Structures are given as structure tokens and as C-alpha cells.
Image (tube, rainbow, N blue to C red; front, top):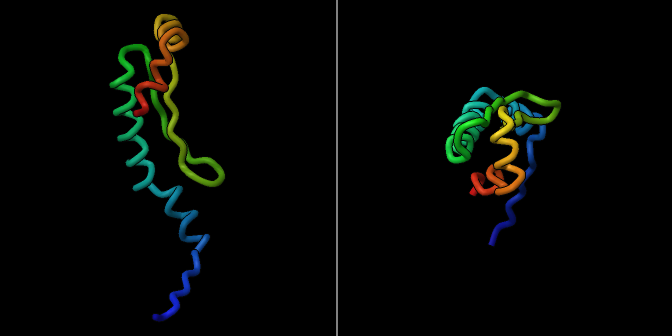
Length: 78
């Protein structure tokens, strides 16, 4: 049995996590979650210091109330 050595290329992983391709994946996932949540939610993807991030938030008072009472966003993540 041979020993396999694996060395993580940190710079390469960092570039991957910030890449346009990763942003497209996050946008698609955020869009799916937002659609399951219903009307009154918005989404955005931005690149932070270490990686790209997707956000979904309530845009209307009705959505805020529904999310507070029913955990709409959390349930939409499944």
C-alpha cells in the first residue's frame, strides 16, 4: 500500500471560492431558495475577503412578519 500525500494549494482554493463560477453557483442556489420563500424576498451575491457570499433578505413588511412567525427563510433552505 502506497502513501499518498496531499498538499492543499491555499491560493488556488481562495481563487476558486471568489471566482465568477462560484458566484454563479451561489446565485442559482439563492434564487432557488428565494423562490421557495415566496414574494417579498430579495437576493444578492458579493465577494468578501475570503469567499463569495450569497444573501437573501426580506424586502417587505409582510415578508418580515411571515419570516418572523414561520421561519420562512430557514425552511426554504432545505
